[in-house]
Length: 420
Ligand code: ASP
Image (cartoon, rainbow, N blue to C red):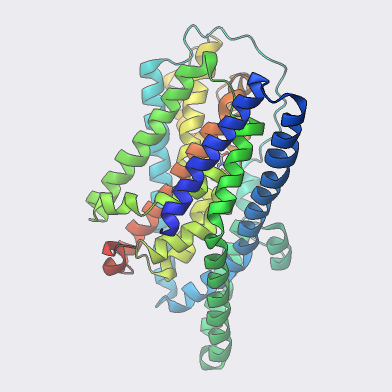
């Protein structure tokens, strides 16, 4: 069985196993002793431990992976001006696709009106933490201390430092050759480490999903079904149609091949609900399955995992309309334009970890004068949606990596067409 098949089976097994445990618990069939075995010993015990170790081991690879692969990426790029072109292209594509995502979200939300007549009572007050200001976000991209940036896992700062370090290492010419080779070897080691960790994925995925569906629960959809299914629809629509069009029309690649190669990556994103934890797998997928040269992927993927969150922007757009309708507050055209702008910025500032998109939603709501407490209305169903939007987030990173690589001539069509 291929690894992808095992990962997909693990996902199905985890979801079914978790749902079964929950059902058995709810039916009261096994009584107290059964609950202790099913919940305390299995779901909340062994499987929770395996799941958490799995996420920790993925995150363990992130900082060394970004640092070594980005330095090696810069070394293999012909000129500093090419780095400039790649940066501009990548950032523009990330911004454009996010703006399309949020516009689609607003369009469908206004068409379907998910919050109309919702008349939802406000549950207990939701306390929003203050999102950082745009100025803070921009200044904080530049590191003062690279070691601190790595210790904190501050991705944008690590990216900036790695780029500068790579350019400088290249700049010292021949005397830097031995160190360049050491970096290549260290990069090989980290890539091997990621490969080893991915082999363990079926156990990790199974455990994470079993715990989630058995214990943590995914929320009762109930009154929120219109919001829930609309959001799900727009996420899938954007993932398939928008990305499919970019891949077909701009990268001139076969969209079916593209999507079929994203299967196991999607399961990773779905079960971890974190584009940051999934990043090592995203990088591996775009380079070894999609044919993006590491010189491009090592830049576009970490950057995307940090700033490109189309799925999150879609949630923020639909949630804003939903909350406005549930509170009977009319938004003007200017308000909607503000939503597009702030949701794009908010999704850039959203860290790729579970649930952060909802916190950043506060920034969007405040911008158009909607009550931040409205977030409490949708928080109950956010877990499953978070998992799905994370899939869209990482697929977006992969799509942009392909488009940029193709346009820079740093793309291996043979790998893309291969059966792996
Ligand atoms: N969980 C999402 C991600 O990691 C972020 C979010 O929307 O909360 O991509």
